[in-house]
Structures are given as C-alpha cells and as structure tokens.
Image 1 (cartoon, rainbow, N blue to C red):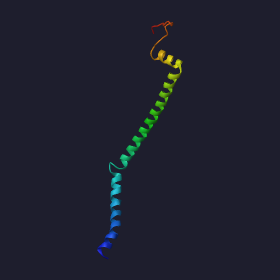
Image 2: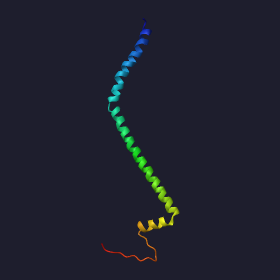
Image 3: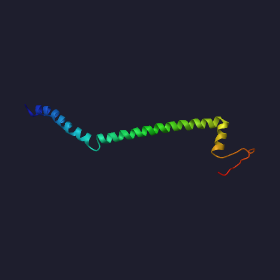
Amino acid sequence: MDKRQLAQRAAPIALLVLASVSVPAMILSPNGLERLRRLEAEKEQVDEEAARLAQEIRRLRAEAKRLKTHPAAVERVARDELGLVRQTEVVFQFKE
C-alpha cells in the first residue's frame, strides 16, 4: 500500500477521532450546552414579555379609539384622571 492509499484510509478515521473528542468537549464547555439552556430560558422570558407588551399595545389602541369616537369616554377621563368638573356643577369636599 502506498502513501496515498494510506492517507485516503487514515483521513476518515482521523476525522472520526477528532469529532469524537471535540464534540463532547464543545458540548460540556461553558459555551456549550449550559449556555444553550440559559439562552433558551432567556428567549422564553423575552417571548413572554413581548406577548405581554403586545397585549398592552392592543389595550391602549382600543382605549385611544374609544377616546376618539366616544365623548363619554373623554368626559370620564377628564373627571377621573384630571379631576375636572362642569361649570354648572358644585363640588363638595369632605374630610375623611
């Protein structure tokens, strides 16, 4: 067997040995499987936060639409959040 045939047979075996050593080393290293799990947990948290924010955006858009189309909604906000009253109303304040 000449050197060329020997190299052709040894190359796949060397590659297999290299892979069998390096793959477990990469998986068990700090940048391997442990990091993957941390990143997956972080992604799950980010996805939950994104879903919560999307729901909040939908709620705020619905409220903005109500404020644009319903005068009673504008009045409610003016009374509840800004403390405004009509000119014809009398305000009584009681001590608690």
